[in-house]
Length: 425
Image (tube, rainbow, N blue to C red):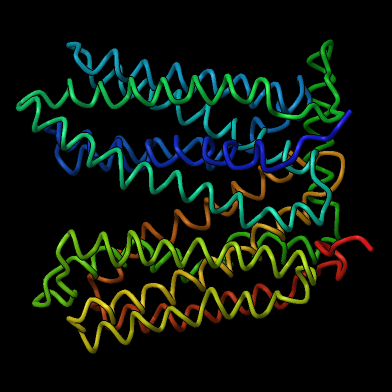
């Protein structure tokens, strides 16, 4: 039987992985704001919605031990479509807040579970060379979903609100009905197109066997390498993106705030062009180029160039905070350089997680890795606003540059097989 091309399912699989995340973490914030909630309420309630992605390693063993990765992917996509429909149905009820939060939590849980299964399926179906080759493609498709969420859904809601003035709940329900239809279509497509790799399907496991499997999975994660080395692995996963985690939260506010407050004072239109278009193109290209380089020469050959790429271009923010350029071409060029470097550098983190997760429990181990990286983004991001308000944008960006030393330090101690990612001869 002819093996199905990864191009037939990787783009749609990772678009389906990215879209619920951007809806829960970004689109929901805009929707609640337009429905009259205060910023304090929005931050408090929507902040909890990110929790499933942080703690998803807790249930990743069940994805490994029950059914197949393909089954979990298909089932979660159907549940995600139902969650979108649930938000749409409850928006116009008296219990709209409780109802939508319930379905957003269901969406977040389903999406986090989908992430586990999709990444496990990716590793199961592809060899290490193809994993390296397609890592840029999968990251690109994930980012396209982000563009779709931020760049199309929110403007679409705005257009509908012009057609139906003073009916914000109704217009958002139309958006979510559309998303439900989109995910049902993705579910149907993947039912017929996704390959069926050899995967264990444990139908009759007892509770004792599940607990034993969980213990075995956790022990195997922490005993893959000597104890001293596992410390360096954990530090790498948590801190590799530490400076970027500090920078990301403040980048948008710096670009939009007026110059009297230390920002560039870009209009929303200019911000959308410079950061949401030119910067994102740089990010996508960086991811694709990073995947191509790693698949040709292996991750170890390009590790330090990737580290430099994700850290040193952050200096463009130091330049912009002092020069305060008003030329949109200059600003766009700076953002392109920084985002291209981030796309390159993120390739190293993705491939290292794939490398470390090799073995029997690859799905669960990869979920643990991604959960740690989410935690590594969340905690610094929570502190970034406080630090910026203490010292101002200029000093804040200088501090971020000094924090790049952390990325170099945690990378220096990890070990990678020189052959990982190379094309087989």
